[in-house]
Image (cartoon, rainbow, N blue to C red):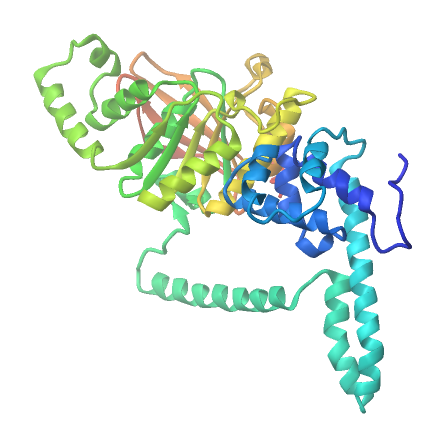
Length: 448
């Protein structure tokens, strides 16, 4: 690969800056990365600084980059000159380089300029300071910051973080000694055995729930929602309609037979229970979105709105294979899933809520001897395994027509043990309840 032409010593590369910014018009992922990885002064060319400022505004508004969007925000502050043609040309630029290659060039040029400015000021400071030690004390923090890319602000926040965690540890110890329940930094599942192993669904973490069709992943998700009584929940259903979801929730809450509800053959007693269930469910903060083919940035935008109005404690997505990526074209479905998985992980951190994503398992497990499941059984598993903090894989045992046992294989637990938790599953009402827990799984690597 030929490096873009370096203009004027080694302090900047105008062409590399241009190609990098042009990527934002083609790729949502690259646009997000540009806004996250760069600062305004990392760009040397004034037009590039101006355009990056517009990108930051679009990023905060959760909008994609288009010529029209850029011009709408730039119209009142557009400098004189060739800015309009410059922006239009950039939209049509075919970029010969990838993001990481261009980022490496621009960051190094930016650091070179900062180093030059620091050394220039150092020449003045060494004459100003009468004492050599005072001079070193003055310039060393600036030099360390530049060389290690580690700011004083980060050092302060790290110190505060240690103190904050220590105080939390002391408080939890006091709670334990006094028999007080230790609060969860997230949402409990509502299942005693499951919470004993995973501790609940923690803020900022990504959980993958995988199963073959008909093995309970949607039913488990709805049972979890049903147990989050005092929480605000968003459920993105890409497979079932809102009516189907609400009917399932009513069936679970009332204990009435789901099939009989659909047929209208329910008893007067069940009807009374259904009335009570509906009265209770209408008071809950359950936000159901049934739009098909939803994209990660759309989930972020809608959840921001939900959080602003109702608060938000947990997000469920059913399921990742039906989502669309933010880019129009991907080399393969595996690349698409990798991009979506990475974005969902980022959204969990941005919103500071747990995200529970449902996924399909590979068909090969149906031909496997025994019923043991592993993380690599996830369809397009590579990125999902890497991005997930917690992986729960489901398989049901067919005991009889009305009852079965759901085995939850915890195959990745970044902060805990690997176990198999069993839930009882009442098939007519779809209700699941605590059943048993099996010993810790041996011979399985819990990779971080």
